[in-house]
Amino acid sequence: MPWSEVSVMDQRREFVRLAMQEGANRRELCRRFGISPDVGYKWLRRWQAGDRELADQSRRPKRMPKRSAAVVEAEVVAVRDKHPAWGARKIAHCLKRGGQAVPVPSTVHRILCRNDRIKPSENAPPNPGHRFEKEAPNQLWQMDFKGHIPLANGMRCHPLTVVDDHSRYVPCLKACANEQRPMVQEHLTATFRRYGLPDAFYIDNGSPWGDTSGVRWTGLKVWLLKLGIRVVHARPCHPQGRGKNERFHRTLNAEVFAMHLFRTLPEVQRALDAWRMIYNLERPHEGLAMQVPADRFRPSSRAMPARLPQVQYDVGETVRTVSSTRSYISFKGRFWKVPQAFFGERLAIRPLDRDGHYGIFFASWQIASIDLTDGQPVSDVSEQVSAMSSG
View: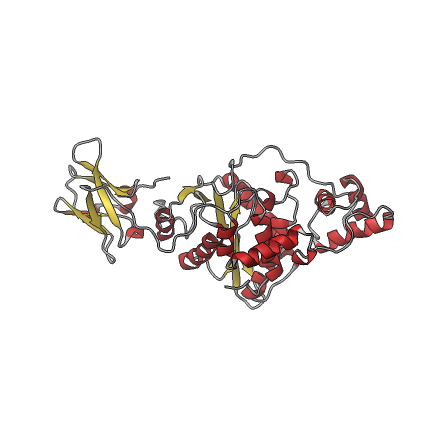
């Protein structure tokens, strides 16, 4: 498949940045980006030779010894006009990264004030304290829906966001028409094919990753577990546990949605595609000591399989297949209810530490329980009681 027509230059830049990371599997990366190794290595050679056509960057010389203060001021204002939500520190680091001689952030702040880009009373935010983060990329991705955005055509946009916990890299940012499982699974499939599989997802308890009963077993979660991706639910009423994702949503709102009223979903998606590249490859991140997320991100070595793996059980285990229409399995002459997310799945029944008590397992996760000492008929067995969350 050739480069996508949506943003050819952006995809080339992203490919080169990821391919130049230490230890990158460049041939695998070419496969995920849908290009041949010859094409991929061609862009790498051009980038390494200084070909700025690849990267949407200015062709100005990196150093201008006779640069005047007026030119410096114009550069600062130009970056601010391009990114109106950026403050002095981000602008200073962005210009410095481009090899230009720039003033310190406090001077940049005064330039912005002089040119009416910010009010003199606006102070730069304090440096954030230490935040917990995973030790390496792809150990944990945070996923959520930003609150819906009204469109001029009367529809709603539901932005789906996925953020890597370690690097803050955003592998998935999609304008969705709804918050339902099929759409989420479709976008995640495309994301996994490009960036590989994370070890775990950190999500809240709402739909489509959780359910109102509190059981949390959903079809999306079962699909992720089959791919070998753990699912970690946030504690109810503790939004601070999803701080990186929440902070990302504020940035997304300030730099995209607060500045424009969009008419259609495709229009939103074009804006999100362009901004995602800026966020991942250009925008200095204060939580990363002014690095950009691409400096710390690596695609996962775990590739998306061509077929969804099936759960395997040990020889001799008691295994039952859930009906595709009724969420029950039979054992010892009785029917036992399991969560509806396991329609059509194979489950194992294993004895627990008390006589007459068994657990119903999906791979290593116990999803329900059996008590043979209880004489209640199946109609009295509550899914809320018998189904158990692994988280």
